[in-house]
Amino acid sequence: MHIIQEEIGLPKVTHVQVKKGDPTHVIFAVGPLPPGYGMTLGNALRRILLSSLPGAAISSMRVAGAHHEYTTLKGVRESILDIGLNLKQVKLRKHHKDAEVVTLEGKGPKVLTAGDIKTSSDIEVLNPDLELLHLEKGASIKMDLTVEKGVGYQPASELNKKRNEPGLIHIDTIFSPVERVRFEVEPTRVGQRTNLEKLVIEVVTNGSLSADEAIRFGSQLLSQYFNFFSLDQETVEKEFMADFTRTSQVVPEADRSSTKESYTPIEILNLSPRTLNSLINAGVGSIEQLVKCSPPTLSNFRGFGSKALDEVKATLATRGLTLTEE
Image (cartoon, rainbow, N blue to C red):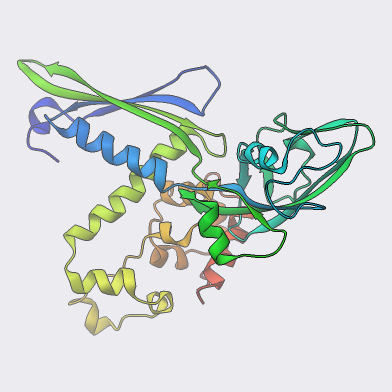
């Protein structure tokens, strides 16, 4: 902590919901901060929030009777290109990271909305009233939509290089659950000190996680990367680059005095935001700490249910790791 904080006291964080009862739009304020810290923290948090939080989106579609995005279908008011633009606006919450194919079909006259998408229990549509396309009398349509989890932005051109299949139409995909981040630095004072700062940051999410969860997720992720600067290169390579299976090996007692305990951040497991936040809030911040927990222990964590437990078990299994059995 900056030496100035001893004089002015620790910063205090406040948050206010712009609309009461809406946890997706919150304004946070933190201060007092030393000179220059408002811009440093605000810019770093904004970049992390917009680029690195995992979310779900529709990445491609396959439409019966359409071979490319410039096709039009009889009785369908929108072109395939327009439908793809509407699908980009569908807000989703997905718990597991594996890609899944969902369907959208209907017969006219009808207006198909996001709520008409047939999903599994793993996927939740957050804006079911969003209109996707209009069908005239006698018209019909059937679509297969691929829902994926990811981070940041993924252009359709990049997806075409990976999966260039006939009839598969890729969509420019925005995975980020954070829709807008705006911050400003305001002057503040404590006693005779008039050069201090207060950071005010506004966060808007799509509803798949709250603004509070987003800011906690982003700050935890940022702090984990900053922690690597306090480690030597050999330790960094061992903890971050080594194969995950090595993290479960027991270090001999004789070697523990000369070697730091391994610490591999759980963020790289790509767990869902709710599961990850529940673990971090309970003090579990690394894979090493996670594998030492038993299922009953995890179930006692606040906000950690059976779905979260199944997700953790499945994710660890892909890396050859398991939870501790009591």
